[in-house]
Image 1 (cartoon, rainbow, N blue to C red):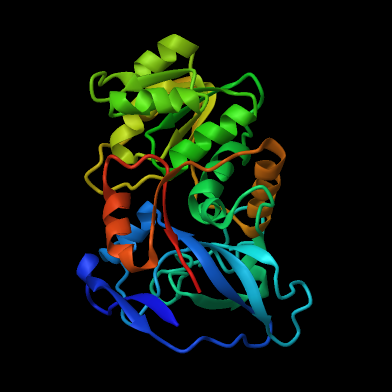
Image 2 (image 1 turned 90 degrees about the horizontal axis):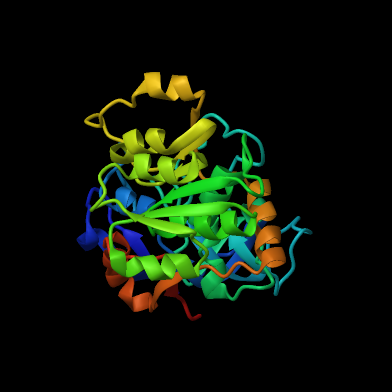
Length: 337
């Protein structure tokens, strides 16, 4: 079979290499998946470039999000059968509730192979049933970006019908948050850096789009227009925190999952305190939350937005596309086996 690896102690696109290997056999408690599609997330760029303070020290299959069909089961597996359609689960030890201590960085990170291979083996509890309403290409987008958006909207302070949600940008998490929040009955405001994306965001259900490049105080604009967002989904990172706080409603919540650095300005805590608002870190989610997302997607007919589908030989091009500011939705890799 063929698989992509990140070569040890290297970084960037040149570290990605397509190699041949034996088809893995499932061990006790494992299933083997014929992978049909995989998708990329911004975290895959970080891992490829040596981020998170981690270094790839052995050949590592990248990426976390995949959809496929079980084609073999190991001894003791009775929860799955050959022919079952599944999607991957991001973390090994996060079942439900708050994230556990020491959960690592998920599939496709240092020390844990990912999904960019024609066949993979995983423990039987590292997959859930694929949404019946989605094909493999669409379903391969849920594991990280879809679940992160779901967790941001449903945990601690769940979004209710009639509330206002502000999402930042048009990447995978933000577009999912727009679609899911709209299906929950919320009014959704979206920021974008390109006017060419505005019409597409409105078509997906955005009530208003604010260009953050031409409106540097976009958070204040959003607050003035809505009276404050009950939920801000900040996938943009530390640079957007000040305006996220300006945008959030009194008693609202900012769910953050973007990249932060030591150089980011500290958030203006007095404003946050005066509003009685909160900031909550969002680190993807557990297996049970992914199952709930699958049910919601099927019930509400959510169709993930695909930026472009690449072939398995074109993974480097897919990585480059995912890193581009022009990306809208998810970059997916189709796999034939």
